[in-house]
Length: 167
Image 1: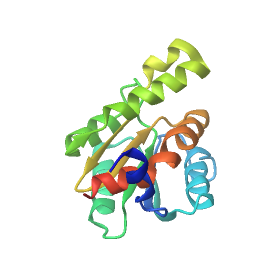
Image 2: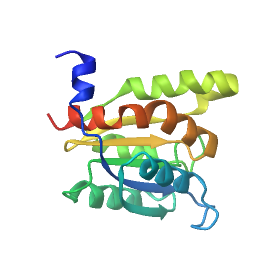
Image 3: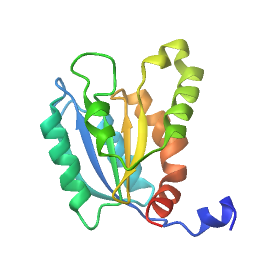
Image 4: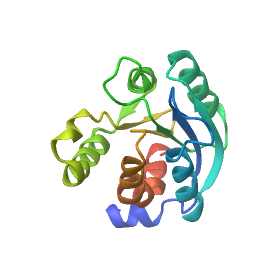
């Protein structure tokens, strides 16, 4: 089976949980999380949980674990906490939980981001991996970064990633 055969055999509908990590955003001011949810649903996927959390490792880990324990969740998309500030702890919290890291996700994101913002893309620590057969994706919190990742990487490959993670 080749790439296109695998992709065609992948689920067209994925159930995803969404977490937004931010010390400054509220549910009313969060645009990135709303965009993730809107794009998932408008592309036929199911939203299976949304939460806005502070940059606190115990809270992030607890929410990720709750989504991992859900039998219906197939993917977790996290926005925020991936920068360089001392409060950005999403990557440090999620990485030890992963069974496998998908290095190509971050590499491709930064390559696409370079085309939009130039060398500032080196400060992005966007990453993805697999934990307990579920896909976990960590994105920057900016609206432009979320749109770039969702439209160019996540939506085209989400079903395929889920299929491969569960085989």
